[in-house]
Image (cartoon, rainbow, N blue to C red; front, side, top):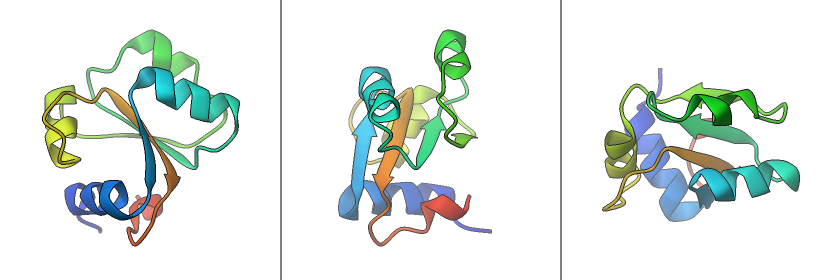
Length: 91
């Protein structure tokens, strides 16, 4: 079992991540997303529109997901484009 918060923070710091619903949709359209991480209160319409990429639900709200990423704002969804030194793809 990996530490999800630490893996997210490492992916944001060392890899490439698209933050926000619009950026995640763009990453899905361009087929660059390897994993989608969504908060528990992410809009339902977004969850129905995922494009065949594995979706992981973070066990917290969008404010908690933003804090886990080290951001001072809420994050409803993020796409892992490149994991960097993180093992986030094994969640």
